[in-house]
Image (cartoon, rainbow, N blue to C red):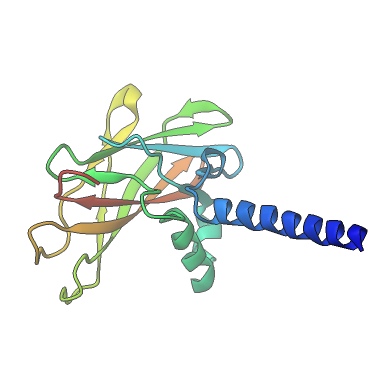
Length: 193
């Protein structure tokens, strides 16, 4: 009888440890080693000004990205917008709302032959008749710093403070191959993100 009780307690203890580990994983930010995924040695690093959090970046060959189904695109969007609140960076519109991008191929810095930007801005208020806005532009070449882009408010402002979600897609060509890197960020006019 005593042996059965010890076995039952051991099983309960192991189940409790497994459940605690699951909860810890499910409710923790995306780990650093999962924040930036590369393809064929091509990597884009992004830094959002005024925020020490790293964005979650996914890089694809352009042909592979365009071949994704709507469900696969939804999974990519769900990944880049973080696992928990506060997982992705925030751009303060009251300061200099910029982000910087640098590119590496096989761990060596490279300059893209062509580069462009697409931002999908999601409305911050349910009354906004236009739920998403698409902005296309070019990035500014900053020399050794890479490239930068300054954002602005893209949605209508219905409240004193607002927060809008931006999905950023950077399209570029390196070595004759077209790539798309995408990440998400929030921006707002509050004092804290």
